[in-house]
Image (cartoon, rainbow, N blue to C red; front, side, top):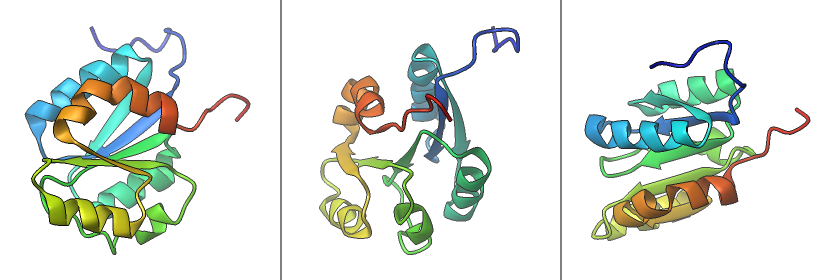
Length: 129
């Protein structure tokens, strides 16, 4: 059952930079259950385009694969919140993400376990916009 245009409006859009199809399916399920839509991109440039076009509530960045944080500088300088996640063993990746200015970094396990809480805490409200 895909979304029916006659359904209630969504809470907002979340954009995710992720190259992991299987994890993306799990994210999609959780995010849709919370009333959001999600759009996936696989690279930094399309992420910036999607963010400009959709003005998302929140952006997720999966840095289990290398991410060019310099390319994402315009996003990280904006008011769009960014939560990034990776393996807990990716110490250099966590340092790079924090140095780049993401709002929050979490391990893959914490991301999976607390995704609804992360959305509630970091997602921008769309009320009145």
